[in-house]
Image (cartoon, rainbow, N blue to C red; front, side, top):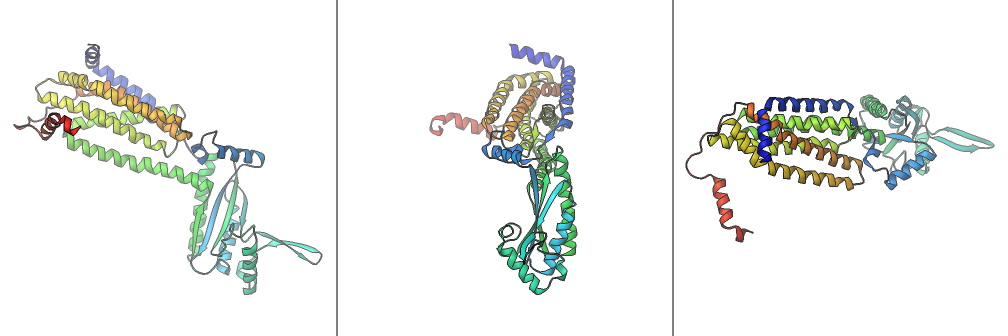
Length: 403
């Protein structure tokens, strides 16, 4: 009886319900501008993670820094040629201009120390690569491959790869560094590839990894989510065969996703690639709830009910199943709070909030919207039972052997 009274209240004040739902969604979605995007791989680990704790202790004792590494590889032979050493030398000089950098180490600017009589000589291993003689190249190769500070660090043991390591001092503006450094280095490598097409260049390191994580998340949000949305839209249109019903389903998806993402912004949750999958989770449940209720309305209209009665009956039949689906799914996602990883916990909590939002909209916005849309009943079914009617009867009649 209480459910019937609630349904009657929603349908009687349907325009007010739609207006309140719209206001709630817009208010929540406004928090999207405050969304915090992960720009450091450390945010993937819990504060008590032993490896992260050790790293923080090390950096607190000495210095906190990030790195980028440019690897220059040859397709044949070794890097100990005039062209390749010249390319590494050029990159080493240009790398000093990288934003936020404070140190650049490479095969060419390594300071070699040796004694000459009573004098102690300190000089770069390579100085003016293009003017080196064959004897100089052999000498440099012998020194580099036998020097512990170079071999397997700034040059591979087989001599096919040389490296430039760039260190960055951590600043308060970590996001700016993650954004600027990869752009500068990629531009640098584009120029290097044009000047030396016979060499291969590879870029890696902490800063590059952090940028790649952000790029992967942006790509997922900008391409995968719209594609999934389109496929759901096409599938819904094919199954329901009603543009107005598809409009109601789309509204549910949009309201659920915008509310959830806005809530993440208002609560300053950190968005990571794992959390970027939350909109898909919300979308799936929004479609599931909507399809149940919308299909019920269409069937009731086909039985001769008027629109208000059809919506009321569908909501009455589906309210309990929709509630059970929502609450059990929320419990499942909230169990992720036992994880040590903050993104996993955030994903669980945000998905659970999305479930709650979709349930609330299913019980308010959707019935109010269906009651104002000029829905038409489905064409009357032909005589004879449908496949699913026959299948259901088959299962019920043979329930024991099937079980």
